[in-house]
Length: 135
Image (cartoon, rainbow, N blue to C red; front, side, top):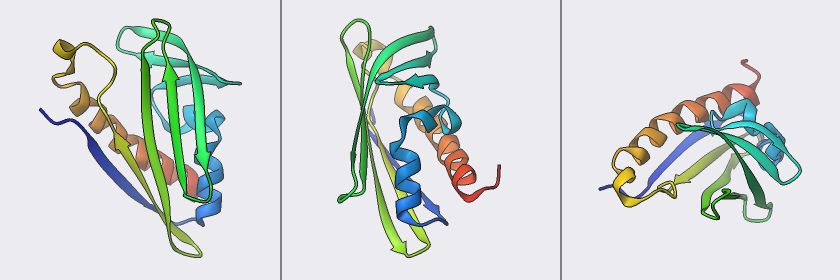
């Protein structure tokens, strides 16, 4: 069973612009399917079982180009997401995202990462369109 997935997308915008957008959690509902709403350390996530309110901590590190998220669910489980931006030149960068399995029981993992991987691919295209002004 696959334990992770790494995907990336080239963005035709400067790294600082992409970083500012991605690191601002309020933009998550614009480019991800999982977030219905985000506000001050909280978020409402869409799950297969319906929407759930979670604690959301964003950990941006501009000097490393990383933006990580820590999501704490009502039952105390924590999900994490890790990403990085790398500059190609003054006007272009690469955004990479490491997808790890969701915090669900082992019997539910089969297929969960694969489904999330397909969704992430779509979300990265939405992010690209949003940042490059094609929406």
